[in-house]
Length: 329
Image (tube, rainbow, N blue to C red; front, top):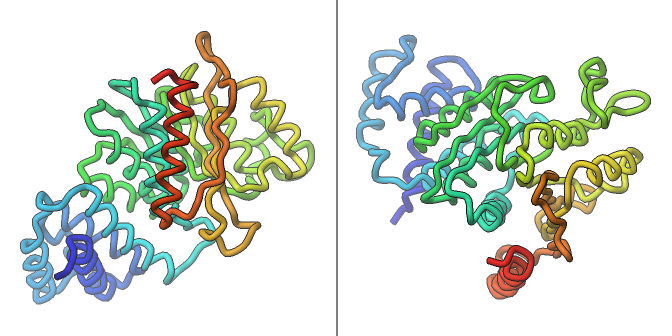
């Protein structure tokens, strides 16, 4: 028996391959095109030959999206996008691993337990895989969400991904370090783009700009995110483990001390990464505000392998205990 995710992946994959040939485009562009078609239940591209249009329509008709859960749709779409990214890799086209997205969702839902309605921003939204994972794990809440990304193909994939899951995300195709036209958020989630930011003129507006040469994009993203967060709002970053040992880390430290309180730092298992340089952690901040108190003890942990169920259960219990004492749940 094939699983629902496999059935959907096969549909996305086979129809994208047909469209790739018909439209003479990349596989990833064809994934965006077929995603639109699946959403509308029709072939929207006029260039497609009659024979293939018939074949595609038949495939789209056979699949009924309402029979699939949001998570099944997201996972199938993610697998198709990953296949496309392997074909033409660009360094910034890195998708947040699924296990990390799911764990991030768990942590976000723990910190926002008391919220009935909230606003979420992902300033490096990519294909919206991380954002929709989090949204799918916040049932029963009224959520408004925003995403921005400079890459027009990724934003197109994010738009299709959100539509297929019926998640009303407002998306902006822009440099996220320019002014954003969004309301301030209760929650920011971001898999930080790591590297240098090429626009020195725009970087000069930031406190965390480099004294000389290019500034670190990941530092500027942290500052921009804090600016667009409400007082008392939470920020969940996926950060490189080297964040606090780089040449500009003293400046970052001082800035964070002034603007936010550190709620936690959860180191992801080393087994997830090719090498130590690539290793990442989940960094949890709360923007300072009238009633914001720093925790007596921040939530610090090295996470076990996600596949180790027993160790993960022990870790979840520790996290629950931390919430019980620090957040008086």
